[in-house]
Length: 84
Image 1 (cartoon, rainbow, N blue to C red):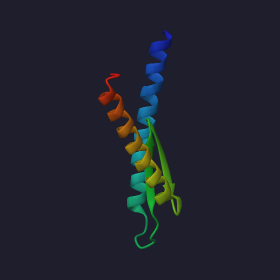
Image 2 (cartoon, rainbow, N blue to C red):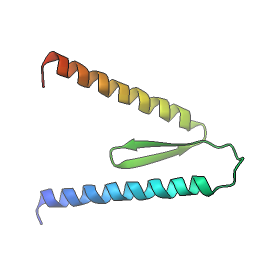
Image 3 (cartoon, rainbow, N blue to C red):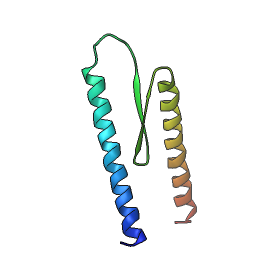
C-alpha cells in the first residue's frame, strides 16, 4: 500500500470518526434532562468536529462565521482578479 492510498484511508477514517462523534454528541444533547439551559455548539474544522459548551459557544460560533465569510470574500476576489 503506497502513501496516497494510506492518506486516503486515514482521511476516510477521520471523516467517519467525525460523523460518529457528531451523532453521539447530538444523541447526548437530545437525551439530557430538559430545562438545564446549557448551550452547545459544533464547529467543523475539516473532518474534525469540535464540540463546545457553555460561555465559549457564542464566541466560537462568531469566529467560525467570520472565518467562513473571510474565505468567501478571498475566493471571490481571487476569481474576480482572474488568478483562477
